[in-house]
Amino acid sequence: MSGAVLLERERLTSGTTWHTAGLLWQLRPSDVEVELLAHTRRVVSRELEEETGLHTGWIQNGGLFIASNRQRLDEYKRLMSLGKAYGVESHVLSPAETKTLYPLMNVDDLYGTLYVPHDGTMDPAGTCTTLARAASARGAQVIENCPVTGIRVWTDDFGVRRVAGVETQHGSIQTPCVVNCAGVWASAVGRMAGVKVPLVAMHHAYVVTERIEGIQNMPNVRDHDASVYLRLQGDALSVGGYEANPIFWEEAVKYRPRAAGGLCLKTSTEKVCAVWSDDLRRA
Image (cartoon, rainbow, N blue to C red; front, side):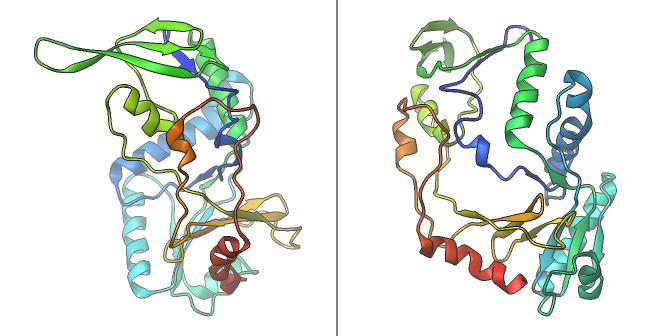
């Protein structure tokens, strides 16, 4: 990793990282994703702490995918088979078995669930800090408060556009390689090099409940049909979802330096209620 430089426009985790859900679900329809997530879990749950002495905030409380129709349950059975091939433990549960595992859940309209006991959550800020520590120990440089202002490119003899360097407010860095990890600003950074990044930023609502008796150690829940999730947060829940008619965030397109502080957008009561309507059925 010697020679790698990370340029952070403000402070690490001050953008959208600090309030991300930090959920890790190991099972996906793609075998490549399953392998990548298995690797990520090993790094976050064990290897980073062993290497740096810092804790990523990993909590292995398990994950639960709920099926409200027969087609979704069949999909989860296929996921279980795929996971078995890659060593990911999972179980398809009946509604009664789901109720035993998660007594607070309303299972009246469920066909079943997919339970992955080794899924969990990480602390986004803690994980980022630990990754930065590990990278620095291997020779990388992390430079904060250094927004990228431009990317120099040139065209070789074969007509291929190549990177020559990166411009910042504090000077330039000569490099033949740029990795765009700008998140919601990735499209804006891509345009600096003449590259179109198919990424759109949207407002996202989530709610943190008050203390719920009996919720401790319960698995995180994902309802793909309703596009909502329930994340265990101590003795409370963080509830989020994706609206049918999302509000796009045009400010991300502009990519301009702003005052320091975490990025958090206001949302409307209507948007929160739209997300919560499906979660309330599950209570």
